[in-house]
Image 1 (spheres, helix red, strand yellow):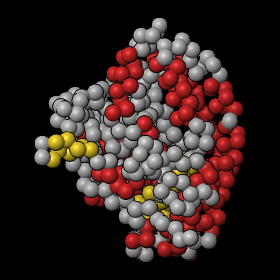
Image 2 (cartoon, rainbow, N blue to C red):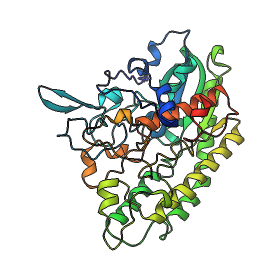
Image 3 (cartoon, helix red, strand yellow):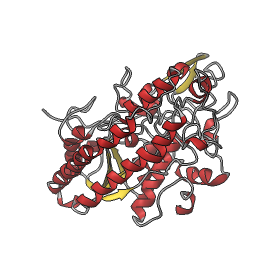
Image 4 (cartoon, rainbow, N blue to C red):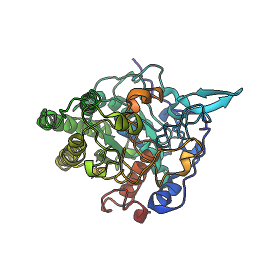
Length: 405
Protein backbone atom coordinates (compact mmCIF):
# COMPACT_ATOMS: atom_id res chain seq x y z
CA UNK A 1 0.00 0.00 0.00
CA UNK A 2 1.44 3.36 -0.92
CA UNK A 3 1.87 5.79 1.91
CA UNK A 4 0.11 9.12 2.12
CA UNK A 5 2.46 11.84 3.29
CA UNK A 6 0.59 14.22 5.61
CA UNK A 7 -0.06 17.70 4.31
CA UNK A 8 -0.65 20.91 6.17
CA UNK A 9 -2.07 23.92 4.41
CA UNK A 10 -3.89 25.99 7.01
CA UNK A 11 -5.63 29.19 6.09
CA UNK A 12 -3.94 32.41 7.17
CA UNK A 13 -4.83 32.85 10.86
CA UNK A 14 -7.30 35.65 11.47
CA UNK A 15 -5.58 36.90 14.62
CA UNK A 16 -2.47 39.09 14.77
CA UNK A 17 0.92 37.49 15.46
CA UNK A 18 2.57 40.51 17.08
CA UNK A 19 4.16 40.23 20.49
CA UNK A 20 4.74 43.00 23.01
CA UNK A 21 8.30 44.29 22.91
CA UNK A 22 8.92 44.61 26.68
CA UNK A 23 10.77 41.92 28.64
CA UNK A 24 12.91 38.95 27.61
CA UNK A 25 9.95 36.87 26.45
CA UNK A 26 8.70 39.67 24.23
CA UNK A 27 12.11 40.06 22.60
CA UNK A 28 12.31 36.34 21.94
CA UNK A 29 8.81 36.06 20.55
CA UNK A 30 9.18 39.17 18.40
CA UNK A 31 12.07 37.46 16.64
CA UNK A 32 10.03 34.30 16.27
CA UNK A 33 6.83 35.95 15.03
CA UNK A 34 6.98 34.95 11.37
CA UNK A 35 4.16 35.52 8.89
CA UNK A 36 1.45 32.86 8.73
CA UNK A 37 2.32 32.12 5.13
CA UNK A 38 5.93 31.43 6.04
CA UNK A 39 4.80 28.95 8.66
CA UNK A 40 2.77 26.79 6.30
CA UNK A 41 4.42 23.38 6.20
CA UNK A 42 4.50 21.95 2.67
CA UNK A 43 3.94 18.32 1.85
CA UNK A 44 7.35 16.63 1.50
CA UNK A 45 6.51 15.25 -1.92
CA UNK A 46 5.80 18.76 -3.18
CA UNK A 47 9.12 20.26 -2.07
CA UNK A 48 11.89 20.85 -4.57
CA UNK A 49 14.58 18.18 -4.60
CA UNK A 50 17.28 20.78 -3.86
CA UNK A 51 15.60 21.93 -0.67
CA UNK A 52 17.25 21.30 2.64
CA UNK A 53 14.64 20.03 5.07
CA UNK A 54 14.23 19.63 8.82
CA UNK A 55 11.95 16.75 9.86
CA UNK A 56 10.11 16.44 13.16
CA UNK A 57 8.99 13.04 14.44
CA UNK A 58 7.18 11.96 17.56
CA UNK A 59 4.31 13.18 19.70
CA UNK A 60 2.17 16.18 20.61
CA UNK A 61 4.95 18.28 22.13
CA UNK A 62 6.60 18.54 18.73
CA UNK A 63 3.54 18.21 16.46
CA UNK A 64 2.35 21.60 17.70
CA UNK A 65 -0.57 20.51 19.88
CA UNK A 66 -2.33 23.50 21.52
CA UNK A 67 -0.90 25.90 18.93
CA UNK A 68 -4.48 27.13 18.46
CA UNK A 69 -4.18 29.31 21.56
CA UNK A 70 -2.40 32.55 22.41
CA UNK A 71 -2.32 31.87 26.13
CA UNK A 72 -5.52 31.33 28.12
CA UNK A 73 -8.60 33.39 28.80
CA UNK A 74 -11.79 33.10 30.83
CA UNK A 75 -13.46 35.66 28.54
CA UNK A 76 -16.62 34.29 26.97
CA UNK A 77 -17.07 33.95 23.23
CA UNK A 78 -19.66 36.70 23.45
CA UNK A 79 -16.87 39.14 24.27
CA UNK A 80 -15.74 39.45 20.66
CA UNK A 81 -15.57 35.82 19.51
CA UNK A 82 -11.86 35.41 20.11
CA UNK A 83 -11.91 35.07 23.92
CA UNK A 84 -9.67 38.04 24.50
CA UNK A 85 -7.75 37.33 21.31
CA UNK A 86 -6.56 33.97 22.61
CA UNK A 87 -8.42 31.73 20.13
CA UNK A 88 -6.62 31.66 16.79
CA UNK A 89 -9.35 29.49 15.27
CA UNK A 90 -12.00 32.17 15.80
CA UNK A 91 -13.48 34.39 13.15
CA UNK A 92 -16.69 36.32 12.61
CA UNK A 93 -18.88 36.01 9.54
CA UNK A 94 -22.30 37.62 9.08
CA UNK A 95 -22.13 38.77 12.74
CA UNK A 96 -21.82 35.15 13.89
CA UNK A 97 -18.81 33.66 15.66
CA UNK A 98 -17.23 30.64 14.00
CA UNK A 99 -14.37 28.40 15.09
CA UNK A 100 -12.31 26.46 12.57
CA UNK A 101 -9.31 24.57 14.01
CA UNK A 102 -8.11 23.96 10.45
CA UNK A 103 -6.91 27.55 10.47
CA UNK A 104 -4.18 26.33 12.82
CA UNK A 105 -3.94 22.55 12.38
CA UNK A 106 -4.71 22.31 8.65
CA UNK A 107 -6.09 18.96 7.56
CA UNK A 108 -4.77 17.34 10.74
CA UNK A 109 -7.62 18.93 12.73
CA UNK A 110 -9.72 15.82 12.28
CA UNK A 111 -13.24 16.18 13.65
CA UNK A 112 -13.91 14.29 16.86
CA UNK A 113 -12.22 14.44 20.24
CA UNK A 114 -8.69 13.11 20.23
CA UNK A 115 -8.63 12.02 16.60
CA UNK A 116 -6.24 14.47 14.93
CA UNK A 117 -2.44 14.69 14.75
CA UNK A 118 -2.78 18.46 15.36
CA UNK A 119 0.29 19.63 13.43
CA UNK A 120 0.06 23.37 13.98
CA UNK A 121 1.40 26.26 11.96
CA UNK A 122 3.53 27.31 14.95
CA UNK A 123 4.97 23.86 15.65
CA UNK A 124 8.50 23.86 17.01
CA UNK A 125 10.12 22.64 13.78
CA UNK A 126 9.07 25.86 12.01
CA UNK A 127 11.70 27.68 14.07
CA UNK A 128 14.36 26.19 11.79
CA UNK A 129 13.13 28.31 8.89
CA UNK A 130 15.45 30.94 10.34
CA UNK A 131 18.33 28.54 9.64
CA UNK A 132 17.25 28.28 6.00
CA UNK A 133 15.60 24.87 6.34
CA UNK A 134 12.17 23.82 5.11
CA UNK A 135 10.18 22.26 7.99
CA UNK A 136 8.48 18.90 7.44
CA UNK A 137 6.25 17.97 10.38
CA UNK A 138 5.52 14.22 10.56
CA UNK A 139 4.78 14.12 14.31
CA UNK A 140 1.36 13.23 15.66
CA UNK A 141 -0.39 14.08 18.89
CA UNK A 142 -0.76 10.95 21.00
CA UNK A 143 1.98 8.98 19.25
CA UNK A 144 4.02 6.37 21.11
CA UNK A 145 7.38 4.86 20.17
CA UNK A 146 5.66 2.07 18.21
CA UNK A 147 4.08 4.68 15.93
CA UNK A 148 7.52 5.98 15.08
CA UNK A 149 8.99 2.50 14.57
CA UNK A 150 6.46 0.39 12.69
CA UNK A 151 2.77 1.17 13.27
CA UNK A 152 0.38 3.62 11.59
CA UNK A 153 -1.52 6.01 13.83
CA UNK A 154 -4.52 8.28 13.34
CA UNK A 155 -4.45 9.79 9.85
CA UNK A 156 -0.98 8.38 9.10
CA UNK A 157 -1.41 5.26 6.98
CA UNK A 158 2.13 4.06 7.74
CA UNK A 159 4.61 4.57 10.56
CA UNK A 160 6.49 7.83 10.98
CA UNK A 161 9.71 6.00 10.07
CA UNK A 162 8.17 5.06 6.72
CA UNK A 163 7.08 8.65 6.17
CA UNK A 164 10.64 9.76 6.94
CA UNK A 165 11.92 7.29 4.36
CA UNK A 166 9.73 8.95 1.73
CA UNK A 167 11.10 12.36 2.57
CA UNK A 168 14.72 11.20 2.73
CA UNK A 169 14.40 9.48 -0.66
CA UNK A 170 13.53 12.76 -2.35
CA UNK A 171 14.97 15.58 -0.24
CA UNK A 172 18.19 16.57 1.48
CA UNK A 173 17.47 15.94 5.16
CA UNK A 174 19.66 18.17 7.28
CA UNK A 175 18.20 17.32 10.69
CA UNK A 176 15.71 14.93 12.25
CA UNK A 177 14.23 16.00 15.59
CA UNK A 178 12.48 13.45 17.82
CA UNK A 179 10.20 13.95 20.81
CA UNK A 180 8.82 10.66 22.15
CA UNK A 181 8.23 8.63 25.31
CA UNK A 182 5.65 10.66 27.19
CA UNK A 183 2.70 8.69 25.80
CA UNK A 184 4.43 5.36 26.41
CA UNK A 185 4.52 6.47 30.04
CA UNK A 186 0.88 7.64 29.82
CA UNK A 187 1.81 10.93 31.44
CA UNK A 188 -1.43 12.59 30.30
CA UNK A 189 -3.47 9.76 31.81
CA UNK A 190 -1.71 10.15 35.13
CA UNK A 191 -2.32 13.91 35.15
CA UNK A 192 -6.01 13.30 34.43
CA UNK A 193 -6.24 10.93 37.39
CA UNK A 194 -4.52 13.51 39.61
CA UNK A 195 -6.97 16.18 38.44
CA UNK A 196 -9.97 13.93 39.04
CA UNK A 197 -8.91 13.34 42.65
CA UNK A 198 -8.50 17.07 43.20
CA UNK A 199 -11.82 17.99 41.61
CA UNK A 200 -13.61 15.32 43.65
CA UNK A 201 -12.36 16.99 46.81
CA UNK A 202 -10.45 13.83 47.65
CA UNK A 203 -7.73 14.77 50.11
CA UNK A 204 -5.45 12.19 48.54
CA UNK A 205 -2.95 13.24 45.89
CA UNK A 206 -1.15 11.25 43.23
CA UNK A 207 1.99 11.75 45.26
CA UNK A 208 0.38 10.16 48.32
CA UNK A 209 -1.11 7.19 46.45
CA UNK A 210 2.10 6.03 44.79
CA UNK A 211 1.37 7.25 41.25
CA UNK A 212 4.79 8.83 41.05
CA UNK A 213 6.56 5.67 42.13
CA UNK A 214 4.68 3.60 39.53
CA UNK A 215 5.56 6.17 36.88
CA UNK A 216 9.26 6.09 37.76
CA UNK A 217 9.24 2.28 37.76
CA UNK A 218 8.10 2.34 34.12
CA UNK A 219 11.01 4.48 32.94
CA UNK A 220 13.53 1.69 32.17
CA UNK A 221 11.14 -0.10 29.79
CA UNK A 222 10.32 3.15 27.99
CA UNK A 223 14.03 3.99 27.82
CA UNK A 224 14.55 0.81 25.82
CA UNK A 225 11.67 1.68 23.49
CA UNK A 226 12.98 5.18 22.84
CA UNK A 227 16.38 3.68 22.02
CA UNK A 228 14.68 1.40 19.49
CA UNK A 229 12.97 4.40 17.92
CA UNK A 230 16.30 6.18 17.54
CA UNK A 231 17.83 3.03 16.02
CA UNK A 232 14.94 2.80 13.56
CA UNK A 233 15.55 6.36 12.44
CA UNK A 234 19.23 5.51 11.96
CA UNK A 235 18.27 2.52 9.81
CA UNK A 236 15.97 4.60 7.64
CA UNK A 237 18.56 7.30 7.15
CA UNK A 238 21.29 4.75 6.34
CA UNK A 239 19.23 3.82 3.29
CA UNK A 240 18.56 7.42 2.28
CA UNK A 241 20.15 9.17 -0.65
CA UNK A 242 23.73 10.32 -0.35
CA UNK A 243 22.67 13.95 -0.05
CA UNK A 244 21.21 13.16 3.40
CA UNK A 245 24.31 11.36 4.66
CA UNK A 246 25.41 14.26 6.85
CA UNK A 247 22.12 14.63 8.69
CA UNK A 248 21.91 15.38 12.41
CA UNK A 249 19.62 13.52 14.82
CA UNK A 250 18.35 15.43 17.86
CA UNK A 251 16.45 13.76 20.70
CA UNK A 252 14.70 16.25 22.93
CA UNK A 253 13.01 16.13 26.32
CA UNK A 254 9.87 17.80 27.69
CA UNK A 255 9.21 20.98 29.63
CA UNK A 256 7.27 20.71 32.86
CA UNK A 257 3.81 22.13 32.06
CA UNK A 258 3.30 23.24 35.67
CA UNK A 259 5.44 25.09 38.23
CA UNK A 260 6.38 23.96 41.70
CA UNK A 261 3.65 24.47 44.29
CA UNK A 262 5.44 27.51 45.73
CA UNK A 263 4.94 29.30 42.41
CA UNK A 264 1.23 28.54 41.89
CA UNK A 265 -0.83 31.74 41.97
CA UNK A 266 -4.08 30.13 43.19
CA UNK A 267 -4.62 28.79 46.70
CA UNK A 268 -4.83 25.04 47.14
CA UNK A 269 -8.25 25.01 48.77
CA UNK A 270 -9.24 21.84 50.55
CA UNK A 271 -12.29 20.17 51.95
CA UNK A 272 -14.00 20.45 48.58
CA UNK A 273 -13.07 24.14 48.10
CA UNK A 274 -11.30 23.57 44.79
CA UNK A 275 -13.31 25.76 42.41
CA UNK A 276 -10.69 28.49 41.84
CA UNK A 277 -7.88 26.24 40.67
CA UNK A 278 -10.34 24.14 38.69
CA UNK A 279 -12.66 26.63 36.98
CA UNK A 280 -10.55 29.78 36.94
CA UNK A 281 -7.01 28.49 36.73
CA UNK A 282 -7.59 25.29 34.79
CA UNK A 283 -4.91 23.63 36.94
CA UNK A 284 -6.80 21.20 39.21
CA UNK A 285 -3.95 19.62 41.16
CA UNK A 286 -2.93 19.37 44.79
CA UNK A 287 0.29 21.14 45.77
CA UNK A 288 1.97 17.78 46.21
CA UNK A 289 1.21 16.91 42.60
CA UNK A 290 2.57 20.21 41.28
CA UNK A 291 5.79 19.31 43.05
CA UNK A 292 5.66 15.71 41.86
CA UNK A 293 5.43 16.80 38.23
CA UNK A 294 7.83 19.76 38.35
CA UNK A 295 10.46 18.52 40.76
CA UNK A 296 10.47 14.75 40.22
CA UNK A 297 8.80 13.39 37.09
CA UNK A 298 9.85 15.97 34.48
CA UNK A 299 13.53 15.85 35.58
CA UNK A 300 13.42 12.03 35.62
CA UNK A 301 12.11 11.92 32.04
CA UNK A 302 14.75 14.45 31.03
CA UNK A 303 17.51 12.31 32.55
CA UNK A 304 16.15 9.15 30.91
CA UNK A 305 16.10 10.72 27.46
CA UNK A 306 19.58 12.14 27.98
CA UNK A 307 20.81 8.60 28.67
CA UNK A 308 19.23 7.37 25.44
CA UNK A 309 20.88 10.15 23.46
CA UNK A 310 24.27 9.34 24.98
CA UNK A 311 23.89 5.61 24.34
CA UNK A 312 22.78 6.02 20.73
CA UNK A 313 25.03 8.89 19.69
CA UNK A 314 22.16 11.31 19.14
CA UNK A 315 22.36 14.96 20.13
CA UNK A 316 20.33 15.82 23.22
CA UNK A 317 18.22 18.94 23.61
CA UNK A 318 16.83 19.48 27.10
CA UNK A 319 13.53 21.36 27.07
CA UNK A 320 13.08 21.00 30.82
CA UNK A 321 13.09 24.73 31.58
CA UNK A 322 11.72 26.02 28.28
CA UNK A 323 8.47 27.40 29.74
CA UNK A 324 9.79 28.17 33.22
CA UNK A 325 8.21 31.43 34.39
CA UNK A 326 5.26 30.93 32.05
CA UNK A 327 3.90 27.54 33.12
CA UNK A 328 0.23 26.88 33.82
CA UNK A 329 -1.05 28.88 36.83
CA UNK A 330 2.44 30.22 37.56
CA UNK A 331 2.86 33.39 39.59
CA UNK A 332 3.59 36.42 37.43
CA UNK A 333 1.40 35.23 34.55
CA UNK A 334 -2.17 36.18 33.69
CA UNK A 335 -5.17 35.40 31.51
CA UNK A 336 -6.36 37.61 28.67
CA UNK A 337 -9.40 39.72 29.47
CA UNK A 338 -12.31 40.39 27.10
CA UNK A 339 -10.79 43.65 25.83
CA UNK A 340 -7.23 42.33 25.45
CA UNK A 341 -5.42 41.12 22.39
CA UNK A 342 -3.69 38.02 23.78
CA UNK A 343 -1.19 37.92 20.91
CA UNK A 344 0.30 41.15 22.29
CA UNK A 345 0.81 39.75 25.80
CA UNK A 346 3.53 37.12 25.46
CA UNK A 347 5.53 38.60 28.35
CA UNK A 348 2.82 37.96 30.89
CA UNK A 349 0.71 35.12 29.48
CA UNK A 350 0.88 31.44 30.36
CA UNK A 351 2.67 29.44 27.66
CA UNK A 352 0.79 26.24 28.51
CA UNK A 353 -2.83 25.42 27.66
CA UNK A 354 -5.47 25.10 30.35
CA UNK A 355 -6.16 21.76 31.92
CA UNK A 356 -9.66 21.21 30.57
CA UNK A 357 -11.86 21.01 33.60
CA UNK A 358 -15.51 21.91 33.97
CA UNK A 359 -16.39 24.80 31.68
CA UNK A 360 -12.96 24.78 30.07
CA UNK A 361 -13.92 21.82 27.89
CA UNK A 362 -15.99 24.28 25.82
CA UNK A 363 -12.74 25.81 24.60
CA UNK A 364 -11.06 23.44 22.18
CA UNK A 365 -10.20 19.78 22.72
CA UNK A 366 -9.09 17.90 25.81
CA UNK A 367 -6.02 16.68 23.95
CA UNK A 368 -4.74 20.27 23.88
CA UNK A 369 -4.65 20.45 27.68
CA UNK A 370 -1.28 20.82 29.45
CA UNK A 371 0.60 21.39 26.17
CA UNK A 372 2.68 24.41 25.13
CA UNK A 373 0.35 26.88 23.40
CA UNK A 374 1.31 29.16 20.50
CA UNK A 375 3.67 31.17 22.72
CA UNK A 376 5.12 27.97 24.14
CA UNK A 377 5.54 26.34 20.73
CA UNK A 378 7.46 29.38 19.52
CA UNK A 379 9.68 29.24 22.61
CA UNK A 380 10.43 25.56 21.90
CA UNK A 381 11.19 26.51 18.31
CA UNK A 382 13.71 29.05 19.47
CA UNK A 383 15.32 26.48 21.77
CA UNK A 384 15.69 24.18 18.78
CA UNK A 385 17.10 26.94 16.60
CA UNK A 386 19.66 27.90 19.25
CA UNK A 387 20.75 24.27 19.61
CA UNK A 388 20.92 23.75 15.84
CA UNK A 389 23.19 26.76 15.48
CA UNK A 390 25.36 25.81 18.47
CA UNK A 391 24.90 22.43 20.20
CA UNK A 392 27.08 23.69 23.06
CA UNK A 393 24.75 26.61 23.82
CA UNK A 394 23.57 27.12 27.39
CA UNK A 395 20.59 25.07 28.61
CA UNK A 396 17.36 26.27 27.06
CA UNK A 397 15.05 28.00 29.51
CA UNK A 398 12.80 31.01 29.40
CA UNK A 399 15.25 33.05 31.45
CA UNK A 400 18.14 32.68 28.99
CA UNK A 401 16.33 32.56 25.64
CA UNK A 402 16.75 36.25 24.86
CA UNK A 403 20.51 36.16 25.42
CA UNK A 404 20.80 33.33 22.87
CA UNK A 405 19.39 35.37 19.99
